[in-house]
Length: 139
Image 1 (cartoon, rainbow, N blue to C red):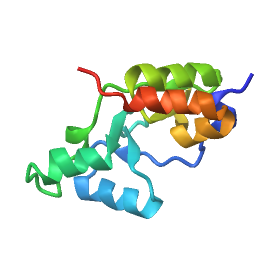
Image 2 (image 1 turned 180 degrees about the vertical axis):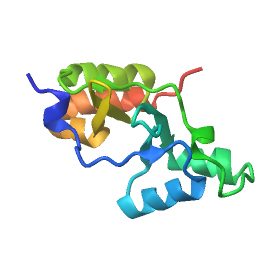
Image 3 (image 1 turned 120 degrees about the vertical axis):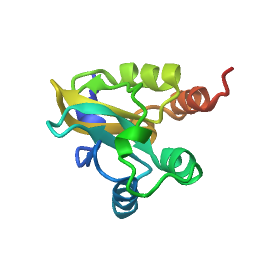
């Protein structure tokens, strides 16, 4: 049984919800990622923010670069336990149309599983089905 811990990327950075929008954008650039987990000062995961959130909700809405990133954070977060089976991750990605799933050990963020992590683990057919479901337009 393959678990989240076995396929996750464990070098995951978390941006504080009080950090400026520009700080989150610089972190994404420097880390070469399109999304970051957002945490409170105590390390509690509260959501995710994507480069698209910054572009659409922040820049296009003409918010100042100093706007706290927590204001743009998607609070509807779907996470998995580090011992969750890869099939559970597939199901979350498909059902909720998310491309990245934070991995928790108790309350602590220990990694993130992305589509590419899952793709390396599963067959092409399974991966294609999940990517299709994630990308499918829903009303």
